[in-house]
Amino acid sequence: MQLFKKLFKKSFIVTSFTGTILFAGSNTGITIPYVDFPMKEGKGIYSTKGKCNMCHSFGYVINQGPQSRKFWYDKVIKMITVFKAPIKTKKDIETVTNYLFENYGNGELE
Ligand code: HEC
Image (tube, rainbow, N blue to C red; front, side):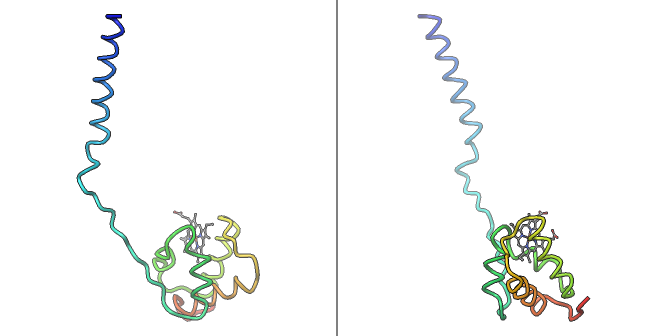
């Protein structure tokens, strides 16, 4: 019994100590900054918002800088084939590509 008590006491101390280390920083009020990537208003914005923001922020698009229509079309196809973005119809692919090109394009088709 004495041994049990001793062990219990030891493990209690170890547990409390570990707890202190693990949760030591939890009440220091760390706030994670919220970064907003507003989308330009334009035809097809709602389709694009629904289809392109479900896995990552729109920052991925904005950070590419102005690009050609082919670039945006290829990106949309890449998202579908590589990452399984649920964009099923040709019409949706066109709508999203056109939105991206009209608002984040460089005027070049190729
Ligand atoms: C099913 C999830 C998913 C959807 C939906 C999705 N993406 Fe992505 N996207 C990813 C992943 C995963 C990456 C790679 C992330 C990384 O490398 O950190 C990525 C990366 C990107 C990049 C960075 C460049 C690159 O080629 O990796 C761009 C631009 C991009 N996506 C645009 C889009 C656009 C436009 C749409 C809408 C048509 C879209 N994404 C929809 C998953 C998705």
